[in-house]
Image 1: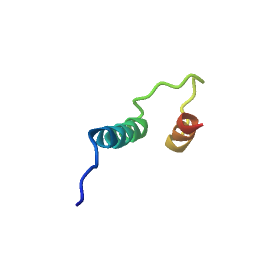
Image 2: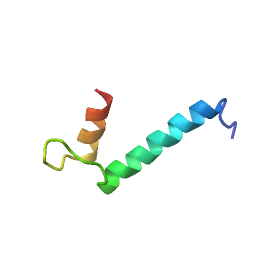
Image 3: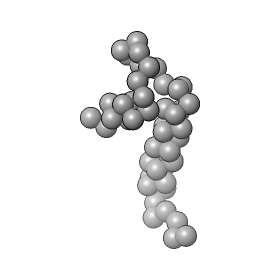
Length: 47
């Protein structure tokens, strides 16, 4: 494995991985009051 070029890059990647784990586990709060799918929650984050 080549590793990370910078600490910032590693931090950003690991934050994204942890965020996806939280979405899958249902540990995020939704403003709509419903329980959207993991894909819908991710789409809301990137738009």
